[in-house]
Amino acid sequence: MTFELPPFAKESLPDGGAAVAAFKELYRKEGYNLKVSFAPVIRAKKQAAERADVDGYFPAVSENIQKNFILSRTVHVSTWGVAERADRPVIWRDVSDLKKYRIGNVVGYDLAAVLWPLQKEKALDIEEAASDELNLLKLAKGRLDLVFIDSAVFNRLMQTNEQLKGIKKKLQFNPKPLQVYQYGVAFKNSPNGKEALRIFNASFTEAGYNSAVESYLHKNKAFLP
Image 1 (cartoon, helix red, strand yellow):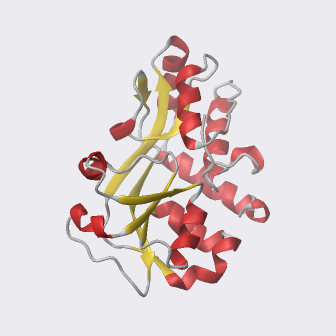
Image 2 (cartoon, rainbow, N blue to C red; image 1 turned 180 degrees about the vertical axis):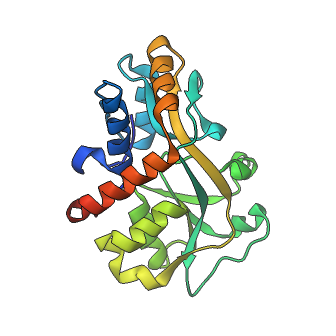
């Protein structure tokens, strides 16, 4: 299971996106046919836990992996942080400084662990949207002060997304990170899940994955948002 995270995972893209295509190729080389289903974030995690025909979900991090799942070796390391308006940068030293801002987050995205105490206290003014693109558009229009987002996703959207083309110079990624995540695949703690995990960990290499992703992005430029 996965959710829409273009260009790495998107149902309408060839082979389901760059990351999904890389995983399919990995399993294909081992003699398996990987099938990937898409759903909104919350539903994807729920279905991964409840459906007997699902052995795992992606992306996942150790801080918020679901119960009865095992995290694979690291697939990708990226910074989770703050997107801001270039003319109104967010100045903060401690996460408590973020309480005064209107914050955008995608429905179903878990907050970074450093924010959990503030989340528990309901001290953050968070407005949820269906996608990163919508949050960034709202940020550019002044309806939000900042947006929680992965740095790689932010950079890719700014470079390639037609909806955001006109606001490219208005937004930037804050240099201070909230958290650095090591993303992996969460496999179910079941016989099938453990076997899928064994194959993945034995076959995956960071260099091979990065090469497959870059090759996919180059090959499928015409299809990318």
